[in-house]
Amino acid sequence: MEESEAWGKPVERTGRLTAVLALATLISAFGSSFQYGYNVAAVNSPAPFMQQFYNNTYLERYNEPMEENLLTLLWSLSVSMYPLGGFFGSLMVAPLVNKLGRKGTLLFNNIFSIVPAVMMGVSETAESYEIIIVARFIVGICAGLSSNVVPMYLGELSPKNLRGAIGIVPQLFITIGILAAQVLGIRSILGNSTGWTLMLGLTGIPAVIELLLLPFFPESPRYLLIQKGDETNSKKALQRLRGWDDVDAEMMEMRLEDQSERAEGHLTVLSLLSQRSLRWQLISVVIMNMGQQLSGVNAIYYYADSIYASAGVRQNDIQYVTVGTGAVNVFMTVAAVFIVESSGRRLLLLLGFGICCGACVLLTIALTFQESVTWMPYVSIACVIVYVIGHAIGASPIPNVVTTEMFRQSARPAAFMVGGSVHWLSNFTVGLVFPFMERGLGSYSFIVFAVVCLVALIYIWLVVPETKNKTFLEVSQMFAKRNKTEIKVSDWPLKDSTESLEKVTTL
Ligand SMILES: *[C@@H]1O[C@H](CO)[C@@H](O)[C@H](O)[C@H]1NC(C)=O
Figure (cartoon, protein in one colour):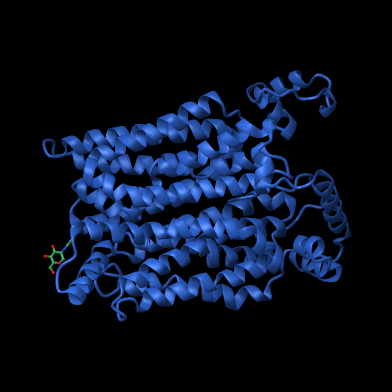
């Protein structure tokens, strides 16, 4: 999703966070990334009222109550059409960003938010649950596009020295969106039998705000120059973003980068799959994205309320525990930004998956004994919170960072597309399967998630190297033996490459 620091090489003049840059960042992250998070959690707290609406609608149409299995199926569909739409959205990224531009795509993408927002808003009046299911698919497309285009747009707006920090803003707004949905989902606010349509429809508000405000901000200068060949407007955009007139150096640099990229050529997904020298890097991207989603993080968000209920939290207190969890998630995402540069990626991944695995095992035990031991429900809640912490520092943010660092410029878009597709398909699978798993296995469903975390942990331990401060060549050298390829000596700028590698490892 994120493609921060994708365009290498430092620039001489240190970029400032100008008002134009800051506002463009906030508006696009609020208008797009926020919605991604909001819709992940928006159906969580009104779930019982929505299911009741499904049941009542069916009763009025066919004069008999809905079968429990059908209700579970329709509900699973309502939840999982969202990530399925996300999958299709991420496939649409490449053609759209090149045709409409980055800002253009973000503006266009608002159709996929405002239309379903209206649909979900009128679903109750129209007495149709089918509308909700279709709307969830469309708003999923919106999320799939946002999750790739916002980081791309912001990455291309930022000066290099701010690219890392600004690159985290979309992820931060996703967690803020989740928190906002949890707050609005409180029973006395909108999480009730009359408020849920408004709650689902509210996703259109950020879209409208973005549609009204973003047109006043510049399109990506890099897109204008390289894709459009529009030197004048590219320069104007850059001048507004940087807050100074002398942007010739940066313009020149963009042209140079473009040339070297053209010389390297772009790898398509197919040619990426057939590259032996990138095989294990690609497998690692797939495993990390599967691990991230199949470890059950969205099961926790989609079904948090029922998890707390089965953990024995009193019905009225559930909503506050949910909001607390969301706040912890936001806080830990902010913390991850500061930890990641000092601790390295590998340690955070191992720690994150390890914590999640342990939390799942403990949660299973706690749920099993909650009838007989009075304080067990508190242990269950602690497990969920510890799980969220583990996910927020490792499994959630790090796979994209590592993906960026394992592939060079020419292979990166293809690698991100593979990662993005695996991300949304795994997300889809969990949403569809978890309700059935929960009904069949009860508290033992968390053992499945624990096993996934353990497998991811072992894989990362054995295969994924530390990529912090490594050049692409050093990373491919670390993978060379596993890929059964040789790195040609002429590829290496340094004679004593192994030595410099060891030096970096011990940093
Ligand atoms: C649907 O509603 C009826 C009453 O209106 C209820 O008896 C039945 O259990 C409900 N079905 C499900 C699957 O919740």
